[in-house]
Length: 146
Image (cartoon, rainbow, N blue to C red; front, side):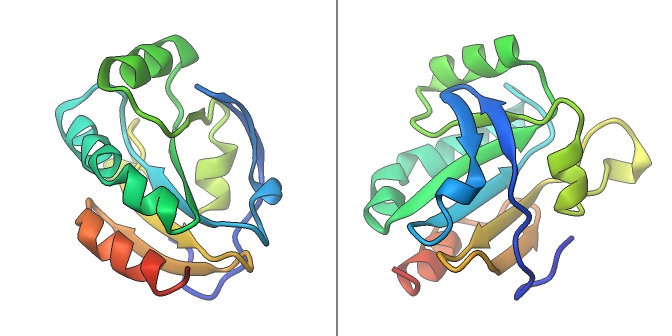
């Protein structure tokens, strides 16, 4: 896991809402990157639905949100449509984003770890936490940067 204060690696990747170029957000918005193990699985659904429930507040704080995992685009689109996620789900097919952000695999196996990063407008990591932190915690960090 990358440490707070580290420059966030930039990338371009396909998502449920088209190509995402992280560099385009640097200097303009804060960014929340949610690395999650699987599309349409119970804990991942709960985590991303909690973010969606507070998406208006997050967006109001000039912050972009992206979910990231290596799953296929068809499953991502279905998952995003089913739960009406307003934020893009990024396909990290070759796992280059996971590796750049030092996101490990659960017990070294197939699924990536669950990690949330918040990147400031200046492109540095402001927050890094394993697991499923409460959205209120994310909002606290974001609102103090807005």
